[in-house]
Image 1: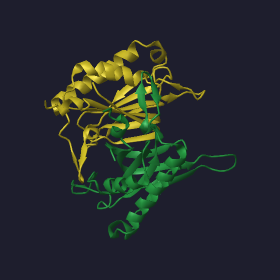
Image 2 (image 1 turned 180 degrees about the horizontal axis):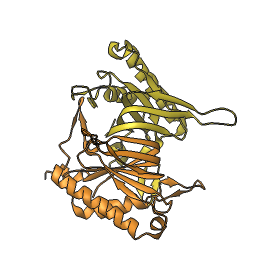
Image 3 (image 1 turned 60 degrees about the vertical axis):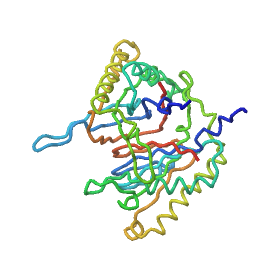
Image 4 (image 1 turned 30 degrees about the horizontal axis):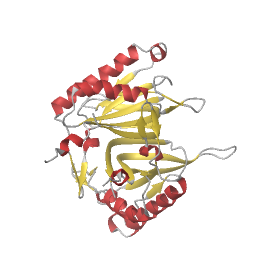
Length: 170
Length: 170
């Protein structure tokens, strides 16, 4: 019996990066209008890429995993979640994470359609914001969830420390 | 017959990032000694993590793939390799890329020993430098290969664009 290999592909890929601060351009300069940016202080940058087969049902799981993973080093040198740090979150759409190298060329056949990806990305952001709104540790000291513009070229300036890449198979 | 699952694990993970410029701390400040940095301009940042089973024989393959992959956007909007751009390269050891999320905690059981990792990292750097030394496009205009210190906490300040993550199974 033939096996359906597509079942073994991940449906989303997150790249998690600790940062001391970050500044992301969300609107390039146009004519007489200056470029717009969002900023975060110490916390977590979450690069998100949705692949074929991703659905809204996996978004909550991804958000929970990302916000609760003990990746951030606190002042005592202990690894805690960004919620417990407590720190800011910057969410950045990053379709290139879905690429596969074929010879010298990146192919993006696994990536979800732009429309579906945009919808899941919005859901991802709102789910992160909901978590922050209901978590007293981050809420009381005004920690923030910022996000990049879907479909934009992502230009970020950040003082960064380390990356965690963990593909999610949902 | 039992299958050896370890054969299906990747032996190294590279994270490739386009950058407009980057500055990496290679020596933290100590006492009266100032911190030391390396800088690159437009080019490619290569985060490298070696996992159990990695050997010198895969390093050449990884370097070739990274330096020849058509990831960088040139002035005409065409995707070319960092050698053809031509651009700089910054190599950064990033052991955290080997982590697997178990519940809320990152585990690093798959990572290679520090000694073996350091040796492969050195080999990776020298192989990139050799490629640059023998490639006229990058050599003639003094494009450079810089690298981070193995074992250091990596603090980088970069104006970045996009990520490509492609696990290598060698």
